[in-house]
Image 1 (cartoon, rainbow, N blue to C red):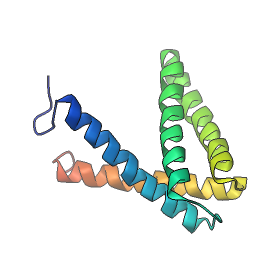
Image 2: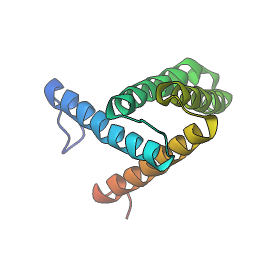
Image 3: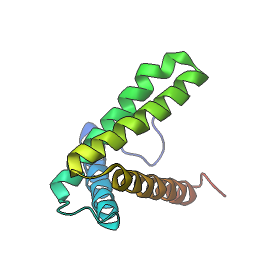
Length: 123
């Protein structure tokens, strides 16, 4: 059953996904600049955003059948893989990759709260 107010056709969903990629790539680039990563580009940020999202989804689905322990394994393993991925994509240190990850998680939590507030999910 479709959610009221959300588009259901494929073109709209692809457009929303593309907009989300661009938006969070800007956040990733800003996080890299906050962490003072030299030479960080928008292309690297797009690649890191796409790859981090893929790693997160794959780790959740791969460990989903394990129940509560699977969620913990997915969280810890996924975060470790994302940090390593950020080190490789931005050619940076572990500390700077952790700063990038922290800023991204913080912004996504704020964004989820704002969306929930705007759509009536939080009163």
